[in-house]
Image (cartoon, rainbow, N blue to C red):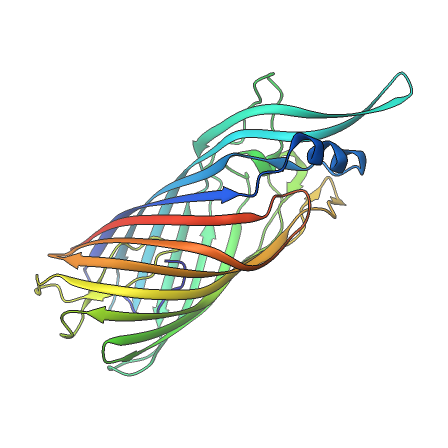
Length: 310
């Protein structure tokens, strides 16, 4: 679900899909947020975060596939610890900011496959995150939210990466890594650079006929082949060991030391494919994480997807 393989669409073929991601963060009490505010850390929490993404991909040549994804973001019940001085006395409070919803930043990716034949495949990936998302959302009190809480960032961020995969009968092994360079966006804010990568092992239950085209081509999708003329249903079970890292953000040239972090997760999942349609579900469970205190740690992330290849 988050690891790329190195396959590409055949020339003239395309795919489209919808992906829904639900992230459940650890819940911190108001007292914990106030304590962090007392240390000048404006930590925040939400009840949950949802990203619903619409994606499409097109095979320009047999070696080059271009994909695009547009997300819709919801952060439910955003709250943040604040620190202020009143009458010479330090006051730590928790500010209720409300729920944040809106169109997020679109992503365009190009994958170029370097290899031929039925053996191991290698591909290079390049892309760009576009500032299409909303950057003017306000709290329930009418205050403009900080950039990190907005659905969009207002920045243009280039991305580079690589992927490798090899079929082994009913089993396929894939690995990928993608690095995103952040630039300054709205409110003089530069969010941290990001790395996403991992390895995935999948097993097909059903047809093992040659495969010629892919399911939905969203930027974080695992592009898995199926034969365009084979309408027999198949099941794939897969397991990912993957991780994400985010660097510290900078606001008006000042580094926010308490921002950023990393986590590594195991992601079991299953995919059903029939007649060009594909549906899948996976859950990411943390095996290690080091999230700096401005953000909560992650409990789990559930991802559902539906795709159609043409």
